[in-house]
Length: 115
Length: 112
Image (tube, rainbow over the protein chains, first blue to last red):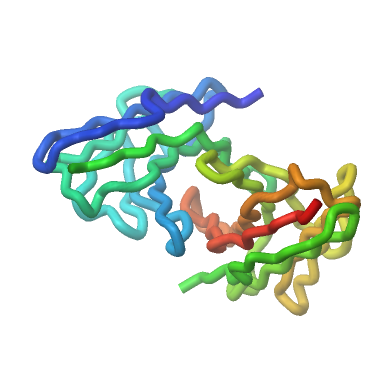
C-alpha cells in the first residue's frame, strides 16, 4: 500500500511564526503536491514537484515556499504565518505518466490554526 | 481554465437505494478520471478511476464515462450510512504533474 505521511495532524502557531509542514512518501513516486482545503473552496494546489530539487507554483503559491531535497520528502514552509493561512493542508504523491499513473495518494492532512 | 463541476449537494438518498453522483469537465482533451471519497475531517481516498467510454464496475460502485458529453458519473448501489461523505471528481488533462483538476465535491447523505 502507498503510504503518505504528514508529520503533524494538528498545529497551532502564532502570527509571524515560521511554520514547517513535512510530508514523506514510501512508494518512490516522482510527483508530490501540497494543497490546502477550505470549506466551499475545494482543493487548491499550492506547489508541486516532479523531481528532486524541482518545484513549480500551483494556483495559490503566495505566502508559501517548498523544498524537495530528497525524492521521498516534500516540505511546505510558511515564512511568516498569517491568520488567513488557517486551513487543512494535504500532501499527495503520484507516480506520474499516462492515465491511471496520475492517481494521487493523500496523506492524513494537517489542520493548521494560526492565532 | 480547466474546470470540473459538481453539484455541491447535499444529496440525500435513502439506505438501500442507488446514489448517483455526476461530474462534468470542460477540457475535451481530458484523458482519465478519478473518484475520491472524503469523510469529514479526513483526507480524500481513491474509489475508482476510468479512462475508457462506458461503465466500469467495482463491487457496489460503478463509474460511467461519456467523453462526447464530457461527463462522468459514480453510482453507488445498495447505499449504506457509511457511504455518507463528500465525493470528489477529478480529471487529468495531460501536460505534466499538475494536469489533475479536482471538482469541489458533492456531499452525500445516506438516510437510515
